[in-house]
Length: 379
Ligand SMILES: *Cc1c(COP(=O)(O)O)cnc(C)c1O
Image 1 (cartoon, rainbow, N blue to C red):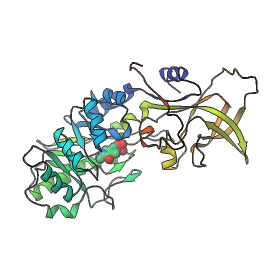
Image 2 (spheres, rainbow, N blue to C red; image 1 turned 60 degrees about the horizontal axis):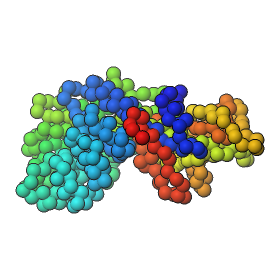
Image 3 (spheres, rainbow, N blue to C red; image 1 turned 90 degrees about the vertical axis):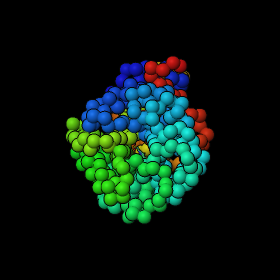
Image 4 (cartoon, rainbow, N blue to C red; image 1 turned 135 degrees about the vertical axis):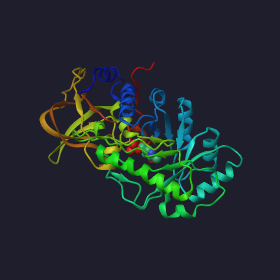
């Protein structure tokens, strides 16, 4: 279940094992597959916030049409990674961030009327690429996080588009990122088609010469089951001539390019439950705790046991995989069956390449960070 090169990287890790392994080739292949499924000319950007590891980012920046960033820090990462183009969204851009985005020639996804005025003021006289992020009035296909058709801090309310200020930087189109973790590719295709149709009508109504529609990310990963986002069902209509369609997934591109490995430090029974206590936890991989699900693991047996005292071992039981933090919420998995598990074995959590390390609270309790091993890169 754990790919051989990943297992080899884990076998070479320091003991007790605590490591992220990234395989950029998986993400690169995802970009190629997605591009092949989309109408010709669609721009495939990668949303850096899913995983901003610099080595991974460099590998992804080469085949991607660009990188999507959400802060000045990510903008710097994207520039260092050699992004071909950059798109910049985010509801609280500072003046410094807006200026840096203009300097970088980024496409700026403007999140409010106030931000449009600020950008216009800051950029006076300079070329700016800008599109309006809109929170549409209509509902969107289901995903686990909805960002539009519902009250959120993201984007300009659709009803406010009719009263936009005049004399702003030119607007080339719309940014309509609206869902997260949508597993239904046919529904996603309908969402993108609808985003383009809406953009054409709205641009005509507002007198915007439409050249750009960005349908955002939101392609889903099933962490607990076997559902896959089926690209054969992602049948999106080509946009009208002169309009460039862009998408910017994060999760779907890098989730499967990451593995989090943590050694079992202790194995114990408490009030009827078995706990595998790890060198690691939610401070490295917060997603299951944040979303409230059990992330599956694979046991990587480590036969070496150099100690004079007995090795804790269980067979054919359900265990909770818990971390090294002093909080009962530091749980990665509840009640997963194991054929055999011993202290010193390593649990490997696949699909941890997106929103894993990057969303976690690394310094809580001040444990050392995991090792990071990027396959195919030096060192
Ligand atoms: C987070 C984000 C994305 C990526 O979303 P995924 O669900 O990871 O595909 C794309 N665009 C914007 C504006 C985002 O905030």
